[in-house]
Length: 240
Length: 240
DNA sequence: CCGTCACCTGTCCGATCGGACAGTTGACGG
DNA sequence: CCGTCAACTGTCCGATCGGACAGGTGACGG
Image (tube, rainbow over all chains, first blue to last red; front, side, top):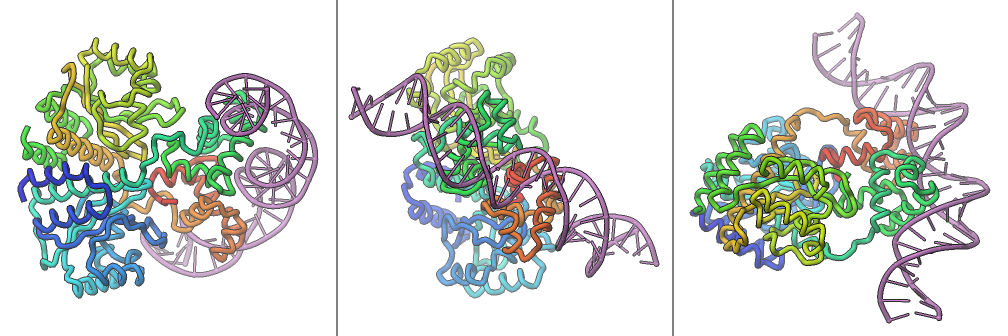
């Protein structure tokens, strides 16, 4: 694959209106570099066992289901390492600490049944601020991917991540669920201020501050102000 | 500039150990496309006036200082629109709603004194989950940047953002400031659970839950559990 | 002209938090 | 063998939150 093919892909990205068309385009491009499968998903951070969110699923039929059902994400060295770094890496480069566990080897063993032997992972910050990883998988026993090809894959990966992101937040033009005052109150609360402190900062009555916080809670349908703050951060309405 | 130049840049990125060397490399590359200046900075989200964080500063001497001191970020159409979208755009494409304000036109006017007339902005999620923008600036009166060149700039921009990110979080290998239990407690607190609810979920005494939360607060040197949660999210120790 | 809505304010009170005190247990490394 | 540290548990109490009650103002559009 030559450099301009990558840019052809990048240019086509603009036109993809659905995750599906993006996925098939990306799969085609990856195939030219020897990677038949790929997946873009969130990674579980330290100790969390929540099922990660899948953004693009280009894994072999069956393998994906097996992986999810067996909760492989929690022990897969590739997945764990993806949560620790932001640099792209070959699966073979995962530190022994995570790849040489019994559980991780079992995952790798099962993968071969579906024609997956090696791969290249590109960690990134994706949708909703979650750390994600786009993993390219190959049936080749080992891959010594030249720098240039790595750079090409990374470029397509982070671009695809960006498109997925853009597809998932469309309604940015509207005013959003929170008023400016509500955002302000949440922001100061996130900074550790009490209601009375915030009231002095903003020149309001303490009661008013608590009232705005209550409105923010209602807007998100949550019980605590902390939850409202987390939600507002997730939706990029404020940044702490 | 040909496609392979971009990949040369991408490959060189691996070797940049400081933001300074990355910046000069990026400036050189941008110049080939007609953009003499650039800046990578956080953007203020709705109603916030906090000074955005500057990651890479390649703006003309003087203009940067003026911009910050006059708090132009709060009224600059390019800056405001960068907070609303994740798609790259030419400065001339900023919707009138934000670009046609008196204040925004004043900013654009002042910029010409420093040889900045047009530009291309690439919004992204950068360090610490903040929405950021890499703005390329040109002295050309108007730029009709072909798609291909836009794709090249975007590629370099998001790659540079990734590198800045990687440079800023180095100590990912260590255990981090929080234990697994502390993360768990924060996670449930972020989900709106009270201490007693969390104690039942985790099978602990309520006192213990509060104690873990206290440890987490200490670890970050903050006063409230909410602050600890926000900090943990910012540092990507948990994702809510 | 009147409804709607953001914005603002007040009181009352039980639930919850956060700080300060004082411990036990088990694992791990020097 | 002993120090250290994560993990765990307890009581007491003032500060704070969150829910429920009941309002007033100004702007904006139908």
